[in-house]
Amino acid sequence: MKLPKSLFQKPENPLEWFDSRSKSSMPDIPDQMCISCSKCKAILLTGDLNENDRVCPKCGYHFRMNARQRIGLITDADTFREMDRDMRSSNLIGFPHYDKKLWHARLESGENEAVICGTAEIGGNACCIFVMEPYFMMGSMGTVVGEKITRLFEYATEHSMPVVGFTVSGGARMQEGILSLMQMAKTSAAVKQHSDAGNLYTAVLTDPTTGGVTASFAMEADVILAEPGALIGFAGPRVIEQTMRQKLPPNFQRAEFLLEKGFVDEIVPRAQQKDYLSRLLSLHEKEA
Ligand SMILES: [Zn+2]
View 1 (cartoon, rainbow, N blue to C red):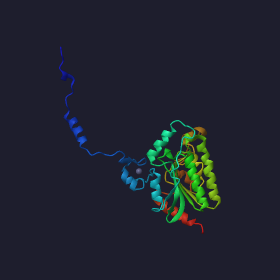
View 2: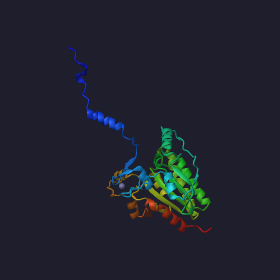
View 3: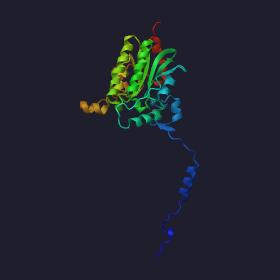
């Protein structure tokens, strides 16, 4: 017996039809138009968040911020002069897939490397400034990051200028092996020379500042500031718990805990940072 073709055909559901038609007439919503706050879970419009300097208007949570946006927020308009912009990392030890990773990082961040250096004015005070870029391999420190920061400190020493630095980093860049670890000593030497010449260095630690960056120039500043809630540490809490076989206290490695223990001098919310830095720089201004 031959069965009719329509035997297994599903009947049309008028509601489904309505649904698909109504979808096609809906406006296109771009991706990442909204973002959920990691702390208070409020749904925020990305545009509103950017206008509020990427701080949640409901609970004050500090979202990650790209380096150029931060330079725009902290420095006086049209005073930033970039140095060593074209320096790029290469795959020095032939680490598998590193070239591809670098290519992606450049595309994602729009930057050549994980730190931007230059000179600028903050509230009319001239200074050297470096800002690390979280969207370039999470601000990891390779040879170029180390070299750019070293050159900035050397320039600042030569011209008797203060340095202001914003850190955000996952630590040393493992794709460059021992060469990335060498940057810790190299940058530290440049910071020491700058300090010995009597110049001021202020660091602002932002979320997260970890590994080799914490263990070198991030923690070597004369004045160490931090953003609220920033994770600051060397090794991650799980590694420490496993090594010490001890339960760590709550809030461990957060800026507030470090302030309490004396590792951080002050926690300065993003909206007050420019004024705060401007005051610090003018207080320490050297006589010509
Ligand atoms: Zn929030």
